[in-house]
Length: 448
Image (cartoon, rainbow, N blue to C red; front, side, top):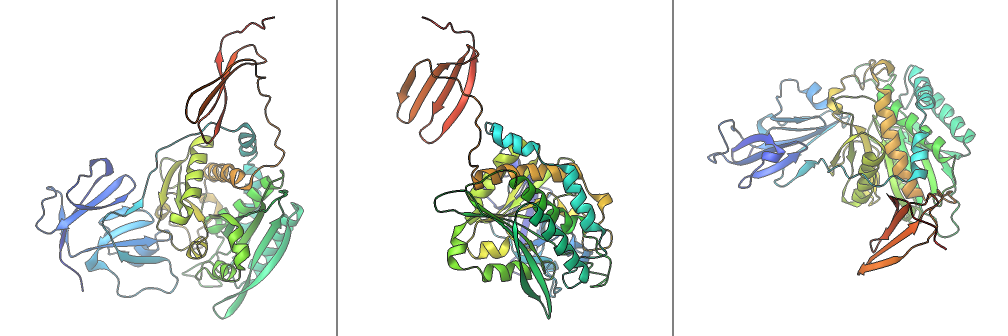
């Protein structure tokens, strides 16, 4: 049964006006009001509006006769008349009421920060060849279905890679329906002398072929060999430095059947261990370029908004990625953490509904975009560097103070110095952060 009919209109977000209910989907906004409200000549009526969140094209593939009123990839708006009265058991899509004032997808302004030379060096060490080799191996298996022997083979491969990088590994037995699978966990202890936090990097290792069943070919190159290989690549980069906080790599099983691995992992976390977690970075499908501009969606919740801001800043500072954000988490391994109050963020390729290969035998290497995956990994390692806290980083030589310090207001301190290049340099404190030296040029005599 539906509510009162509504009149709706989809407009560019910058053209959205007051006077009607609205919900934002990136660069598009849907407006609606009573059926007799005037919204423009292009407006239409519907018995009500429903929000759909889907994995890939799962909803559209199951209901090809439903025409979305607004299509933003992972998120759709459909007529209440088309709301399904049945659902599949694989949890690949969700329907809910569309609420006024929702920002389902946002496009934050691109706010680049001053690049940190140490972080820039780390970002530059992302190795597409290393990442590609791990992903190619994972996708060479006939399937990584959670209950298959080749899933165990994939776990053994990943465990060997973690051990070679200096991580201590454990395997957590999990149930997947009536069957049994496992999570692979790799730990590296931080070098901080005080109370250490924990940063968790996750992806699901399993793959699935929905039409072919457990025995069907499921190379899972993008979903989710791309994220699993990403965990190994970020783990390699982290192993090359000393960090203040602990880091944990997790490759989950049972994700495709309903987040079994991550749900059981979070449920088994002691309260003290859960409280140590500073951030959870989850990667799920990061290697298919589905739009003209390389785009990443950061999906989290209010509890993880700070981490999302840091990722967006890292993308603007160290990559050319377009960033979209959503506080509408769904259907990946960040969700159990968020439900437990832990700050977790999903990084996923933009416009993933344009990727029609996942969950089938066609999710192959040939459809991947290695450059996009590398950009997402660069964004991720830059944010991780801030969360983990580098120990003993060799700082770039700073100019030696040889000038005056000026305070021209509360919380503001400016320092002007003569650098080793004889130019004038400027450093300032804004009340919360020191902003690094910038050269003002010129030549200053040594005096005497």
